[in-house]
Length: 166
Image (cartoon, rainbow, N blue to C red; front, top):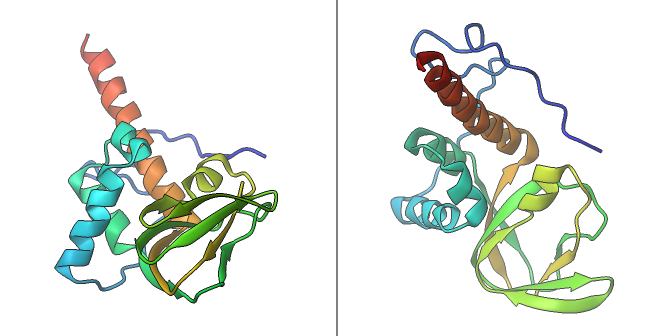
């Protein structure tokens, strides 16, 4: 499967202030304290995917605000290998076991989990299970994709503007 993205006509899909308008989408906002926001921003900034895409401060804020907390109990399965990707997760505390084809391949105490399935619209490549009570922050697939569309569209818009000025 592949991601089908709408082609953006830059004159029509941006408002007067230059902000991308995607089908009047309003991302969710979940409350969190300052320390949690800082933690999430740091995790995103340290991930190579998000470093490459260079989330603007505004998009970073939207991304962080759209993340909801999820607690998982010991031995609770967070995601199953082969399932569709529905969320990206950031592990705040606890521990997760990563199994591929029934074999444990790693243990996680921090980091981002599940981004590849969302980016590639592919099934989950591993089963992830909490080994202890764990706290994660998650963002749903639709919000994730719309933010990524904004990032890549803004990059394309910037490139288009530069080329027009040459």
